Length: 328
Image (cartoon, rainbow, N blue to C red; front, side, top):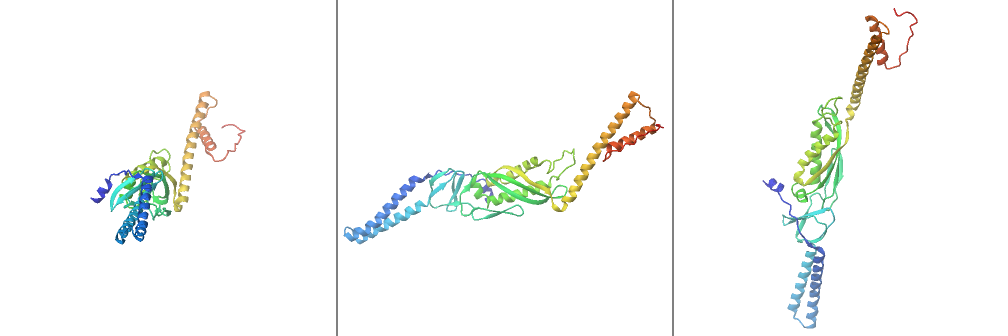
């Protein structure tokens, strides 16, 4: 029930007071408090006030100075594309997205669980996060997901890596709904990449319409983007783009897969050569019969077909032998 309430938490835009006006006001209050602290003992020594009255004035001055100092703690500075999420005594108070100099309730505390933490990207990468910063960046950021080893649809181990372009659009959900929104995004990205890679083969044979990781990288990256957006929706994150940056067979099978690809390429090439050679032989026989150049029996036709196929399908140039005798 609590998780459901967190997901449906609506962002409250806080209209904070002008920081310059409040700074000037608290400086005046501070000056007045200091003046009261000085005036009490001075008037007491001059005999114009009793000691009890002087102590009262001094105490009031100290309270005013302390209150002014506490009030100055409510001053906040926000740069462009930054936001700050505030809580008051454990309850969500509001969010400031507008850049400028503001004053808020000094007892409000900023929430940012990402500060003083680090996240692990991919299977072996490590990315440090800035420490001590309670502001939420609304800028477009990049998550470089290091390459990880997964099995494709056929069970072949492949290495795949991706880069995610993202930004925070709802800072309230980013800091309240999840423990660490950057770490959350990284883990979800790893899971999406693994699940997507298992659904498609690394490569398919020529002429097949089935999607593959190598031949349909843009379509698969788009599928990853949609699935990742669905997973991080509750964290207030918008996925702008997902691109596959690394895709290769795992080292232990890379050489075997390369030989298989070379063999498949040779077979396809030979098939095209044979198809072309048969067509040329058929055309040559038709032309000979059509123009009545020479009459050949079935045995001579078979010999001619055999010779033409050897010439057309051979890997090396044929060495012609001139027949100086008769044909029969």
